[in-house]
Length: 368
Ligand code: NAD
Ligand code: WQD
Image 1 (cartoon, protein in one colour):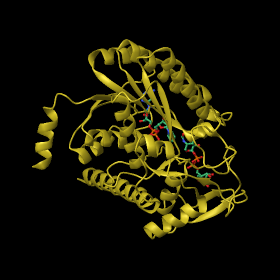
Image 2 (cartoon, helix red, strand yellow):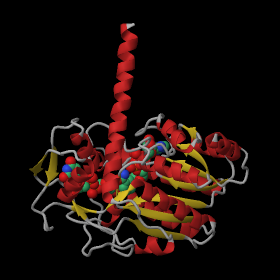
Image 3 (tube, protein in one colour):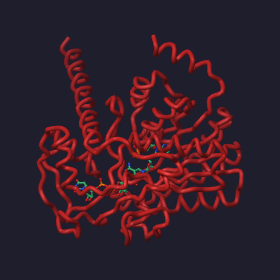
Image 4 (cartoon, rainbow, N blue to C red):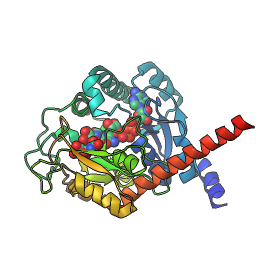
């Protein structure tokens, strides 16, 4: 009943701010869509499903009781986006997640990364002017810092030469946005530099869905714990860190999503003069071995692993100084690393249960 009442109220609230979320069916996008809906925004998603699945909408609906509007469009397609925006006037802000993000793949196939990530950015900035959309939140990354000389890194830490074409697209996009906003005082923007987002929604209805063999640590740990992968390779134990393995700042994906709401409200409230940048991290560094131990403690499940050579391009250690976001956005991370790892595990189990019941259903149909 409560759900139906809420749906009714939501349907007939005309004064909601309309937010376009590009890449809103992806990992971080979908969690942010949930937080946006729960904060009373009207959400429109554009995603070309190049790294996501239409079923994610069902997960969002299960959590929020609302099915957000969705269009399957490539946002680097200027003409298609122009047409779409003409039909959807009154958008207050764009949260731009849509990008290709696989670091290793970007080294092998750099051009799709440049075309997709930079092409989308330019098209959106031009269209924001044409369609009078005043605000932008951009998904940037700690990758822009490379191996910083001093820890933790704050927003004034120098940007190093990019380690990969993917990282370069983030640096270039930050520069393009800065130039575009400096030249046009009606546009305002916030660049959010994420550290290492992990975990899933506590409901387990949405989470990270890597394609093929995961490149990132937590999806690999979770799949190894589930028996899908035989063993985790720990890439390097001879780094200059207390246990020899690399250190990162792992941030809960729902905490991260909530930072987008804070950034959006700051923009809509007119508090941003032109462009601002924030690190989004916990402020704590965790090594690979510490993370494996915490996963095992949180879930009670063993993760078989072996030491392996260093992975090319890895930096030794990085963690955030999130004080600017803490003070100005009045945001900080809330969920513990243990609960975050447990949420990743619960999501994996939920996904496997869903797949198994689909298989059982298929077998039943083919037998009958
Ligand atoms: P994701 O791949 O899960 O989500 C990206 C979504 O964008 C996908 O649904 C994909 O289908 C869509 N997409 C890609 N190109 C598109 C296009 N041209 N038009 C329309 N849709 C398109 O990735 P994610 O982990 O959710 O990352 C979201 C953003 O955050 C990306 O910009 C990424 O670079 C950035 N980021 C991610 C991490 C991370 O570790 N996950 C860290 C720092 C920054
Ligand atoms: C973490 C640690 C690995 C897998 C990446 C992107 C970065 C940003 C966040 C988007 C490292 C080790 C990993 C494995 C391992 N994304 N590892 N065995 O590399 O810090 O950051 O995601 O902007 O740009 O590069 O994350 O999860 O891949 O690795 O030992 O099977 O885990 O060597 O030390 P990374 P990651």
